[in-house]
Length: 115
Image 1: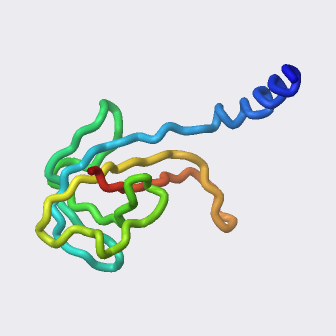
Image 2 (image 1 turned 45 degrees about the horizontal axis):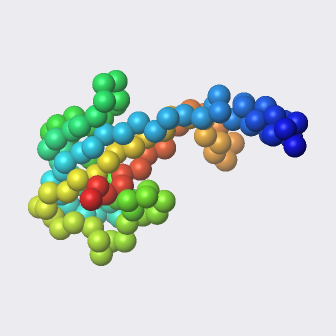
């Protein structure tokens, strides 16, 4: 039994070496517009740890909001109104993505709603 456990740990070790860490920025936004299935917003405030790449205060960003668990897109009926303040967590993970023959470095981004 112990031998099986050790084999499983050793077999999964290379996966650990390639796993990235989600970087997180908490953003306070003012919604400017909704178009092309995206929210367009101005960044009002940013809270993040040092060395995390975040949008800057004053930047305009466009994104599709995600559910709190960031596993799905937030339904449009739950999007904020134009002019409303809103809080999201911008999370990104840098890695190596495989696309249809165009493999290479990429950044996975999600924007889950906070609260």
